[in-house]
Image (cartoon, rainbow, N blue to C red; front, side, top):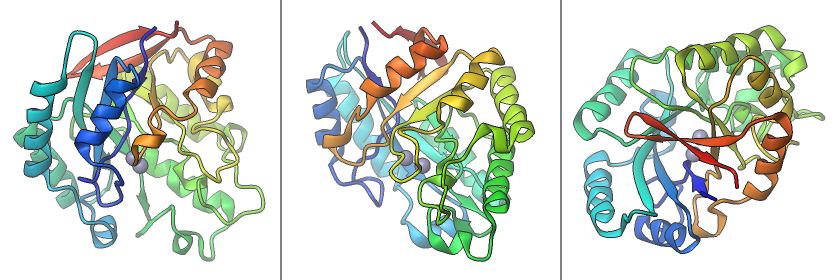
Length: 270
Ligand SMILES: [Zn+2]
Ligand SMILES: [Zn+2]
């Protein structure tokens, strides 16, 4: 069995709680085969005002040094980034420059900022009906798939529901079937990896996206699934993996896909 977690953050991210060496050391002690750090790179004007972006030169030089120290035949630590997609050209150019200058081992492409707000925060929802708030988010996810920079994993689809103020927060396939189909078919066509993210908190789902969306992805031919805890502290690495794997098996998936410097490695569940 190969255990993987490809979406985590250390204190190089503004909201990280454990240091890079502590995170990587904990993952190695837990027996992971592939462990990815994906520090935040939200370069758009909305997010940059809230979070101090990761200092790319300092992070990548520390990560490369640590890789030389800790990687073995059975433990691979990958230094990547979580890119916050934005339609702003300047933001996209900064992400392209990070790819050119530091060659991340993998990139998780995520949508955080929509319509001028991070859609985790209450301000985003003010005056918006659920359909409008969730629809605008999914439109942004669709646009993110055509990002001009290289990316491997499509991060936490459904993020908008994590902290939404509606009586029923769950974001469901059946409420946006055309939009979801467009997103999922595009992921399949481009050969990208769909992430299952277990940092769902109050989303009324144990993980994002939920099984309705995962089943539809499978039905449309999608086979590349990544596991990401989105841990910001050692204690949460691989959290809820024991819930995700049986759910994936039940749908029909047979492996977890790990992006390794442009290649996809498939890891059987057992
Ligand atoms: Zn994220
Ligand atoms: Zn994250």
